Length: 338
Image (tube, rainbow, N blue to C red; front, top):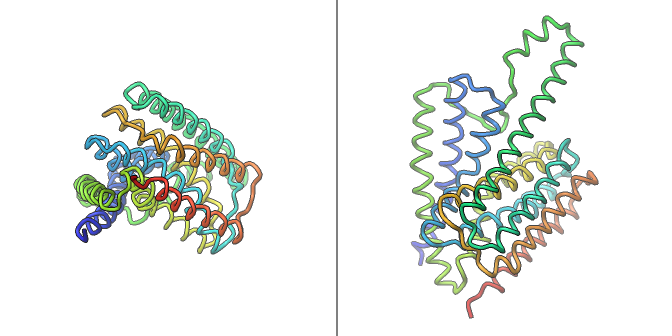
């Protein structure tokens, strides 16, 4: 039994480290090839930071553990709202009025409703996966257009203030800064090594995580979906939680809601979409009866926070954290095998 816990914990650690290394290496290679930072951010970084969840869901679905595949995504989206936003608010006020947050939050609710509809057509197969990936393409395209327009506006303001000739020369090569990706290798060879380590580490971490999780679920007398919704979901959300906590400590909490919305959209569209294209995903009845509705409630809460530009204080943070703990307890009580 101890080996199962070590397998689960070690697998999650390997997944997080491998995903981080893969992102750094991929960004390093892309920058060496002259790929614009905007494209890197919308593709490599976005997919790379979701790599642990993607590999977990793919491995679980291919192994016949659809409960872990679905639970990982649904549980992560719930954890992102209640824990990733709630815990940092206990440290410092977290504004929810980031520009564009309301628009993206509404899209997230729409995506959540599409996902719920697909759940009732279980298993989610090729057709469902194609629908989700098409929505992902729409989201990426719209994000690219918004980013481009915003950059043009900023360049126009800078040019008017500093003189058109000087400003254009200074900004011509600037296509955005990937502030969230640190320690990007400058050497192409080191970047390649990073990518290779990430590609080896992700499936290895997924293997140990799934192996430990299924054994623990059996020993605890709960379904695999329960483990996916709780332990694995929270584990794969640790990078987002750590980033948001550090942002709160550094008084940069305004970016938190945007990160959470983006992560939730990618979880549903990219992870479920890609997995469903590869292998059909069975949706456990307990997830359909309870957890997807909690996820929808969290999406609506996030939309309200963004729409009313609410600033989360300590009391709100405490309420959200308690709500997440209550949800975890409810999942275990409802998931006990009779």
